[in-house]
Length: 111
Length: 114
Image 1: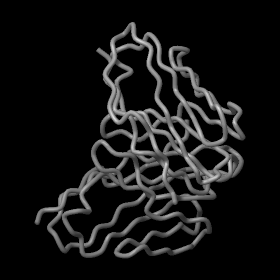
Image 2: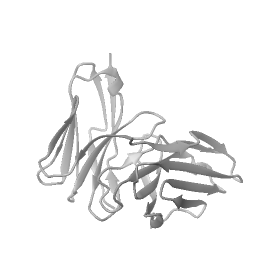
Image 3: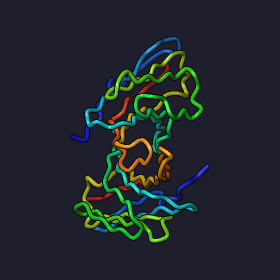
Image 4: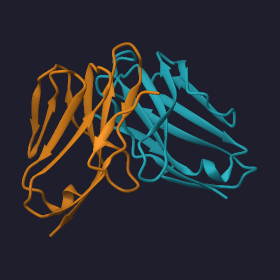
């Protein structure tokens, strides 16, 4: 089946550092979504991207929809302890009713 | 309001029990979903309801039985589960069944099968 390659798998950073993670695919997507999940909770939608080349910010978070439509990245600036969690990318294709999820990036922030 | 509400938050059941998970959304979304998620893994799609009709069943065993009583409610009936079915069960909804432009998740039901 289709897969999204999400990297890195995990990150351990110092508070205040910037973070970058990305997802790549061999196929084209119409939508890229980025989620954050805390333990025992459902994923929370952070940013949604709909157009190739689109760059969108949400506070300290910035995400881009790759021009080839096969990739996306998420940046977090000036990380804080509450950024800890698992970040998932997800790609969607029109008229399929399905999202394809990346394997997740586990972020740990040292105060 | 972007809330999807799931109950119960936690559930422990034996392999012979029958239980139900419940999900509710009042955003007027026309698609509702059940996902299963194992620890530190991405969510796996189980079922999709589009306009209250089952549109996708990802080859889920019959011991999981979904039900959509109306456009705001989604249930998942559980019977004769196995220990390997222990997982976080997530409900989600989206405005348009086809495009999945924004998918909103509930907080999940943590299920343990003994």
